[in-house]
Amino acid sequence: MGYEIEVKYRAVDHDRIRRLLVEHGATEDPAIDQEDVYLRHPARDFAVTNEALRLRRVGSENRVTYKGPRLPGPTKTREEIELPFEPGEASYHDLTRLFANLGFEPVAAIRKRRTPFHLTASAHSIEVALDHAEGLGDFVEIEAMASDASGLPAAQQAVLDLAHELGLDQVEPRSYLRMALDASRS
Image: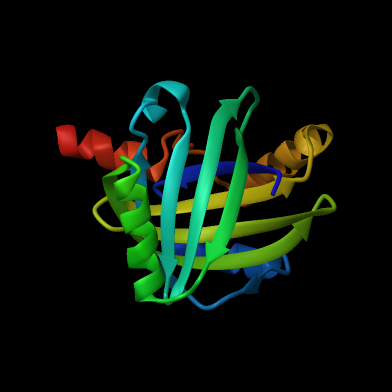
């Protein structure tokens, strides 16, 4: 899959960002509901290694995603491996059972309504997501992918440049998982 480069911003006005994205030539996809279930490894503490294993449902589509440790740099950059698996509730249930039988346990479920926008900026394909995360609030995520490490600096700069052009400045460094875990401890 490659490397995911992203920055998340809080305290955002989705309507203002939507207008600016359209002015930048972005195309808007229909809003989607996502449910992400994060799993705890039976022998490795992902909180210590800064990794994540996630099962994602988008409608009837299912995906399993591994996110590697964060790499140094001005953006959240990490290896990402995402694989689709058979659509539907039965397949999702079967994979959940498989992971449970191997000792993986659910840590948290994050539900969000996401409106994705796609555009090209600085020769990079970029996705900007307007997210409403249940119990956490409204956010904007700007994401690009790099196929290998040599493409990271340019992709990181493209993400940061677009954020600047959109007037985004309140970076939220935590993942939705971390925010949910922090909120549950309060």
